[in-house]
Length: 466
Ligand code: OAD
Ligand code: ZN
Image 1 (cartoon, rainbow, N blue to C red):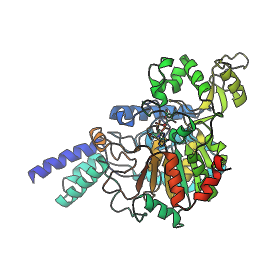
Image 2: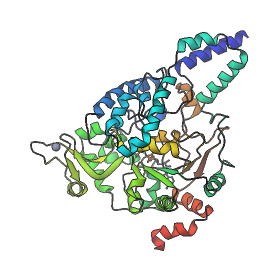
Image 3: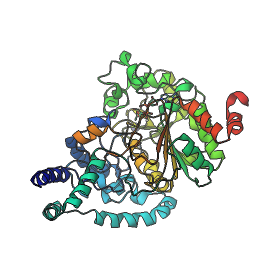
Image 4: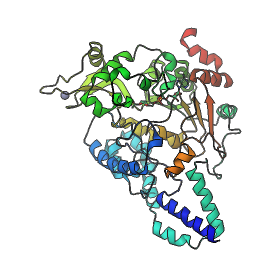
């Protein structure tokens, strides 16, 4: 009993640092963080981030028309940040907090979206109250808990800290947690609102490199730009001091010179079948448009080349204007009166905020999602990556990728004190809904189309058969 007690207090000590409550996660546009690797985040960084979120949220209301941050936000700031105490928890995708409400739209919201959100805003307010938590009281009460309570708490603690998957009470929707199970679920007629999330991996077969594949990825091939670190090429602060590398790269990878891949057409097919609620893409290659997916079905989370803005006076420029500048090897400068500001395409750089539409649509879409398909992404850049946690707890999630992605190593999560690190539970013994289809995206999509009995329709969409 003595040993149990001491273990018990040790657990409490850990819990105190990082509460384990499994609550809907909140997302907020966040400040600069190392873009590439969520595993690097320390508790200290998260706290600092929460503070900066607040500053940034205030700044974002000041009408910056350009896009904003491809930076990670915690599900709720982990570590010893109390619930309800950080700006990161108070808004964002679930948009309940005043500060973040401003950042993501608030009064500026599209009225239709606002209407759809009316109910959830109220729910969120209630939820905020529920989340108040008194750690001191908890610590006192815990002294009286019996062994059973302790064991259950320990189990919850370990499940959360080790990220060992869904809670046993959450019902399983799939008959089998496999690709076959996913296909069967899709065929059953229960699926009405598919959300697809994509990254660079759906465009590599078009000849556009992804970012992080060792050897071929963009970040392995930037030596000639002499950057302090690879991501600097998309870092707004670095860009302001040295825009040349970005514009040289933009010329090389300028949208319009590539064709959509079978993966793009598979997403189009989901739309044609009336199943696609929305496609969220991190890509700026515009290939979804080219594949014929209508604009209202798209959320371009990392912005677009279609417009550009002066970083100083915010004057807007067209794609044609920017294209001409880029192809003449110029550094685009503002033509406004008495302004010599740098002009940048409205793609989201690190330390900038994501487009307002991203935050608005995620609030509307994700609660409705009944199947999430994630294609060709390493799920390392936030807040995009954490969208996988915004679907309902029962919603099946299918990853089509060369490698497993989107789960945080349980040991890393444990060591860094991350409460409920979230992500996909592909390797969890309690996994009831996450499936990976490993391999090339195009092949995975062809296989799915085949298994769904859509082979003919799929092939009709592919350019070679037109
Ligand atoms: P990454 O390069 O991080 O990840 C691409 C993923 O797709 C990797 O897991 C690859 O293994 C996989 N992959 C590549 N080609 C594939 C193929 N043909 N079939 C199947 N899988 C394939 O690219 P993203 O996840 O898109 O943001 O990167 C996210 C963000 O990081 C980008 O939007 C960009 C970047 O920094 C900004 O610059 C703001
Ligand atoms: Zn200007």
